[in-house]
Image 1: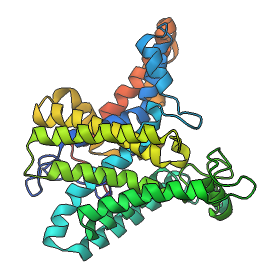
Image 2 (image 1 turned 120 degrees about the horizontal axis):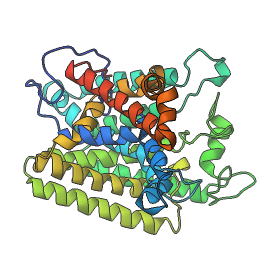
Image 3 (image 1 turned 90 degrees about the vertical axis):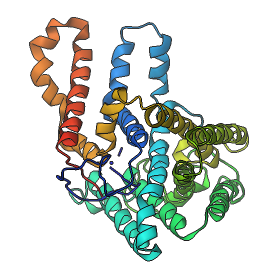
Length: 388
């Protein structure tokens, strides 16, 4: 689902200058690990799931079977790796936000930074409308809230809070969002279902969507990126902001940064799973416990990528992810308008695939992914970046 959100925003520009996003001398050095983590996240969106499922046909369970099982969303309560992909991107948006807005805040002030946030959020929201069909469908089928729209709203909320509040106050707002959302879903009664009911269609978040969210909803009467659940989603973005503040702090050693990310991630996981007993981990309504569990895993992944890529400088393995991660919007929309699978069939479809027998389908998946990586590398080498 996702973008170079040099911050969690997206700058709409076609960059054909002589500097790449991670070498531009006019800006602070980019965190290669953050670009790689963003690309790793998008890798699963662009087709890695099909690769795992293709491999599963040649194995009897084991590690491949376990991974394949993790690539299915939980039907409602619980958590699989698939449920991490979207909140990880929201978390990365928060980390990026800290670095992208720093120069603007220092040199141009809060008002200019605020204008930039408003403009970028509006552009990203509009891209989300276009992604889900834009105005090519009847008006009543337009989806007002979706993945890109949620990222836009999270960037807007977290960005404005970051620009105008001190870190300690931000922590208070973050906690207030989580506790407040829990209180709303736990104590505000839903007609016909009462209070504290977290079942699908019976909870307050779904009820508000049913009553107040117009036009098309993903789940007919409610939406997994609905109105009320946007509040805890902003808290997910703020977790990324806190991680970004740790990485940006020049008084911390690399070891301290990694340790703080790990400790923070483990703490979020512990509290999140404990809260699960009272307020279940549910992605479709973005419960507060889900924010903590997803944020905990996100912190641990960021710590690992930062240690390996930016501290140890072991980067070659991660470059395909970087190609994707610096151009997420182009890759996200590219997958909608460029049929990499159809292109791959020109090379390994028909008689070639048939000659490979049971491996023909897997060959097609691998070739499709290879063309996706080639496209990302082509854009990277020619310094073509679609940003908002």
